[in-house]
Structure formats: structure tokens, C-alpha cells
Amino acid sequence: MGEDHQMIGQASLFAPDETLPLRKRVEVHLVPLADVRMMLERWHYLHRVRTGRQLNYAVLIDGVVDGVITYAYPMMSAPLAGVPSDELVEFARMYLHSNVPHTATCAIGKTLRRIRQDWSNAYPDAKPLRLVVSWSDTEYHKGTIYKAANFEWFRRSAGQNRKNLGSRQAKWGGTKRIVYGDYDHDKDCWIYRLDK
Figure 1 (cartoon, helix red, strand yellow):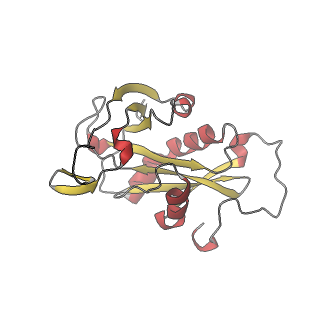
Figure 2: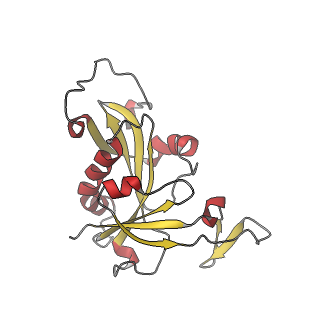
Figure 3: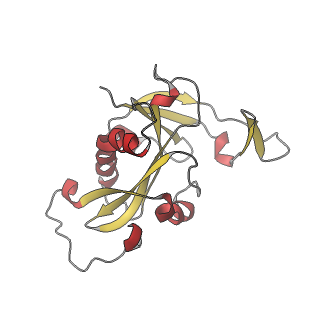
């Protein structure tokens, strides 16, 4: 992407070789947030990007940009599954436009194999990553993709009921953060151990 300014679903000049195994047809490439912002804000069900430290991977199928996967520092300070919060990263966003069967699992696997090194390269002052965490909104997801990608179900967290607040903002750690409606939904917590 970058200088090429590829667009989602851009037509290839060549017919794809669909006889190849999916792992050879799916690629992931690190890209700046600016290259995938519109895709996430327009088509991902949350309609927003993550802030702070993050890595974004463009997902290509047969050389055509089809989606994005985002990893980011989690918005938590407590340890999870015995791992300090500064040694884990959140699988924060995934959007695939075509939704070709098994592409999500294939793309996730490719990013999991390289996230430790890519994170270390991008943030040399960060501690080595030991765990990937993700939350699936029970209103929208059953966790099928996480199971297929070998994540472990860890626990269910109750939604944070903030509807009683007069404004749609709450104070966390002395800073104001927008409170979105999906914060009220229960979330399943999934983990993937990078140091196994």
C-alpha cells in the first residue's frame, strides 16, 4: 500500500490461481494507520480506529487488498493470565471485505507468527510480547474465528454500564475518554500465548 495507494477490492490484472493453497494466496503487509483508517471507520462494525501504539496489517488475497488486522496496546493496566499488561498486545480490529472462507484464520496466523518481531522493530523500548488478548462482543460474535486461530477462551467480562452518565464520557485515570455504546455489551476474553 503506501505509495501504491491500493484500494480495497482493486481488480488484479491477472486471474488468480485458485488452485494454490490459501496460505499461498493470502499475504499480510505492515501499513501505516493512514492507509487503513477509512476502511476501519467505514466498514468495521465499531466504525473507529484504535489510538496509541499499534501495528496495522493489510490483508491481501491474490495480490488484492481485502482488509486489515490491527494490534494495539490494550487499554488496561492489570496483569492478565499472569502476564503484565506491558507484555501483551491486543488483537484489536479485523475487517475482511470479501470474507473468503478461511481467509481470516490464515491471515491471523500469519500475523501471530510475526507480531513479536514486528512490535519489537516498531517499538524498540517495549518489553517483549508474551500474550495476545482479544475481546469478542457477545452481541455480534461467537468467537468462531478465535477458536479456529487457536486462541484460548479465558473469561467473560460484564459490560460497563455507563448509560446513567449524563454525558457520553467517563473519567479513567484522570483522562477523559469517549464512552461508546458497545462498552455496555458483555465481552468474551480470548488469549493466545506467544511464549508457548
